[in-house]
Image (cartoon, rainbow, N blue to C red; front, side, top):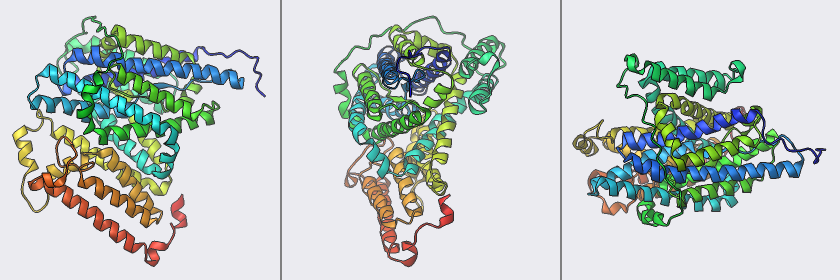
Length: 535
């Protein structure tokens, strides 16, 4: 029996290891949020740093303070003096995904529609706030029914959709930054692999993420002026702090209407963090810290709501890896330090300075590690026979990544892009199909994975239900929208080849659903899965 008279050792040396890991994870996400908007979409930097960052960082502060308090409460309740707080930070998949497929494209579309740059940027900020508020409300609701969602949607669909995001958006895109400056990026990646993948300790037990960032940054600035790294070296940024207060505001109301058409993208991200929160709470329980699941989920929902109401555009979530932080020797000090550092950094502006100071080639390896972890977990956590369903669920995100690249006017000229969308031939144009497969990619991935899992398990009638849902969503553009900006529609309002996408895709899903229903009546369709396939 635990001795409740023992004092909780809430701050120990291991908290410094945990702090550097959790803090740099958050800095990495903020760096890519800013980098994607500013460099890929030419978004005004001051709005990112003074409007988006403060509220986003404040959500992290709020969540980490609550999780710190929950660690104290659990220690008092159980008498366990080694409780490790649940780590909370910015959700990597949704932050990068929403930045790439919601905020950036919305900003470009608004400018193309006649808005000047500042007005389009502010409206995009309102849209981002509204998205966080709606996702936060959704997460509050789903925190009570999250386990039900987890039960009805096969794990291969949930994790397969995450694996696609890990492969295409979190892993592949940062690799471009790493090998854009290979002398720096590959060294940083090697240290991350050495310490986090191979799990080999550095001398004096130096935290691997900390060593990777420091050594990579030093090498970048030492060699930058020599011309050995390729590209144009611009030197260190001026020590300019972008001050901004995360004050609650109702300006998100101005973004509700434009945010509605992006709900098919944003809602699944919220659901995935809820399911992920359930999984990480269970992993913490197995490691010895039995947190209340609903409290963990409600806290992440509240942190997302607080961020949205204060100007934030990225949701918070409990991080995978609480047992890893426990193995580092962390207690509750690391979440307290991370929350304060990120929260105050967003307000006082030193976080934006650090984001500008540390080269993206140095931060990118952290994301590659996260991507590998997500993909590995997706295949290992599912039954072996469901591996094809996990792999199949990855494809829609690959299509979305291609659509993002091909839709960039710096890659494909707008006139050429439109020509390729309407190119006549024996089949639908390849560009149009790529766009359609990528739109609504998260929902598509979840449904594709679920459909194939049920087929593998010989539950053909349930498999056909997934296909009927896919057909209905395709008809109205919830998934497979033929519009480059992914909007929903009534198909009879479309014309030309764009109209053929909902008609053809819907008919295809319906025909396959009927075929499965008929096959379910055959002897083969009534057989159970082969015993050897259950491994």
